Image (cartoon, rainbow, N blue to C red):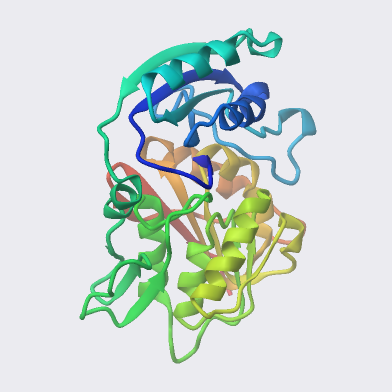
Length: 319
């Protein structure tokens, strides 16, 4: 989810819902903010359906197939009154460029303190008994021996999704504090949560890459808050092989990236993949078994963790 917030956000009473094609999302979002929406959020209109599509544009993928937005998005704009929401919808839909935008409706939202409501939805998240993710407005629980401070932001990854928790659990269970990982790659870093989690467990020389500049900025900011060193940048930052390669994306880009990710795994190193469902496991295993990078053969993936229908796959390259 991406979001734009006005500097004068206040309690909202009405939510305007619009169905918007990919090439109109940015224009419509900007227009809604100009029409004094308190906030505009963008969500995948086909989420949790067979038509769900990831946003990706990875190396090796033909330019014509690279996606820079969902095919259809739902824009949700918050307004203080129904009259404001209705007037804004009327003005937006009257524009020539808005002919493919469709009004889904208005819904009344209880008048609440939105900052308090948002914060209340993000409590400390336990990764293990002793490793916790804690928003800045909460105190760490007494049993937490290792704490990551992370607030909800524009980039994906706050530790609340099963795929993120499984990756962090793998890090916590496999990190050897006596012999820390000397190099690590987080491919598709989002908020930087996996890279930071690895750093908190002793990993050094961490590269965190993403195609989204907002994710890169979020990773740098979150690393600074947690006082760890992470080198964040675009995918071409990744170079050579790593003892650990993490990729928490979605099944479709993971298939495209198979040769690239396999090529980054050092002898004796681990590949950790998340963002896929139970029904996608066999297909991913076959793809990675047959994948080959410039100097490396494919890898045999096995199921390392499961949660709420999501699966964590890992592989180890022979030393």
